[in-house]
Image 1: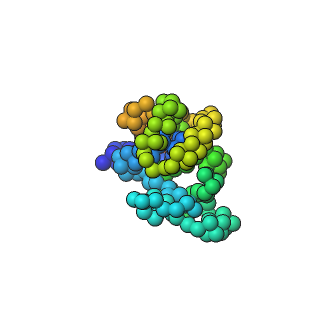
Image 2 (image 1 turned 30 degrees about the vertical axis):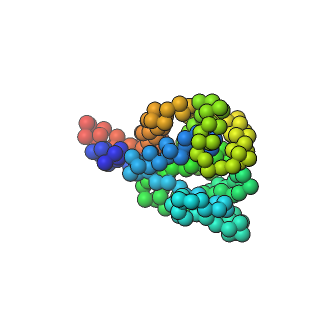
Image 3 (image 1 turned 90 degrees about the vertical axis):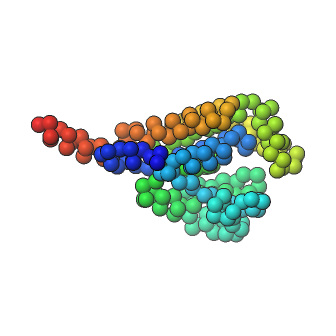
Length: 219
């Protein structure tokens, strides 16, 4: 079991990490997120709500919570989102309650959101948020990947490319910025970032008690 807490003989408590992955569409973020979730049992995905239509192969509650525009507006009014944004004429948001439940259960939470959501989340949760931005090796390669998916019309691809340029301009709002030349190499770097952030002294809430016991025994 690939778990830092399982490997810790002292069962040291720590605060959860709110781990954000962002990238232009087609840069490999979703692939890396899936690999990370499969290898990290203490990491849970925050499933966003969206007003866009469900696509073939998607499942409500697993990929997104698919809601009507009216329902989304009701959730905004009731402050049920940690963050939300307009993307390609649709709305996307992070429901607050499931995230709080995952943190209460001792899990880290993975967010697959854009720069607007990352900014809002950081304003709310501050130091518990770790922001990773994934860049494509080039805009030409990004277009090739989008066209290779064969899921969008050319008009949509052009819009995604236009938005990609705007998204990349916000790279400096992230803690880590990686270039996805190779998905396995990029995934390994993301995994290393998560491991290091979990070990930060500021997150080790059980450290003070452990040190007190350690010094008492020594004395």
